[in-house]
Length: 330
Image (cartoon, rainbow, N blue to C red; front, side):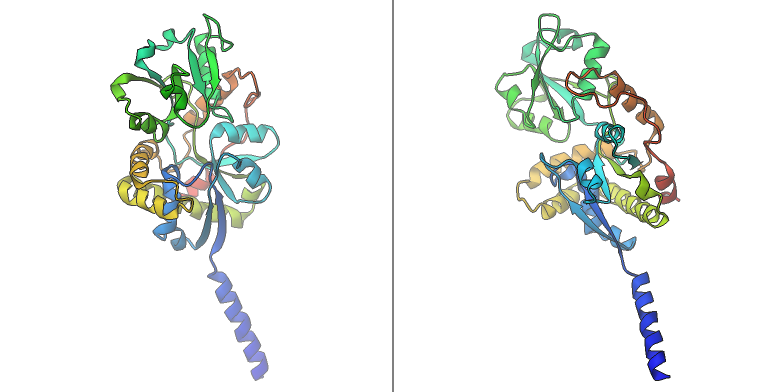
């Protein structure tokens, strides 16, 4: 009798401990540890994931890491990526689905030296423009198609410089305009001693060819598992709590990012600047995707005449869901 009782108690203890065991979640970031992802690090640091019974591992990205490949290979449960990359992967057989959109605004811009004579898009023909590739080029090509400007050079067109992820082409006068993010490279240009008054900047969203950045994506089949769905609801809820805390406490959020930067490459001053700018992009978002923003992104991608590789060729179907954020916001 005692033996049976002991066995039952052990079983009960196992079930109780199992019931309270935190669920593991692995998040793969699009880029290296920086304030672009502050909300997730804040949620981790402040215990918001713990409150949702989640054990979250955040994996930094980098130039040689494609989040879409990581999740398709089983290396992550959820990823951050730009919608262009997410939709392109979906069309090519990786069934990614957007479950939340912490970034309401986009930070991608084209910044030009005023001394180059560029004051408006009408001045682009004959110029050299620095463009990021690897999925970042689509707003540029959509914009040029909208303006009717060829991208093969010549007096009537523009010369495209495949730009690295730095601002050297502008500083070294190799390009009249370069790609920048509001929260990163634009600050680097200013740090180099060029004042904002010496620059002319065009935001792709303002030009009507923007696309959604830094959304949360999972594999569609994973979301069909009720346990996984519940886990993502809790993850999104805690992550958005982290983002709102970061918006309200930018200096503390920047310090949390620094504390989590194992590379030691970041500086507090730059992360404070970055967090201040990122907060402008997440402001007004409760995590739910705005279908109108999705439609603009799709229109941009379909109209982008990229000489190398189109992002998408047909209208996507089922590429996002509001079910996760609907549940998280209850």
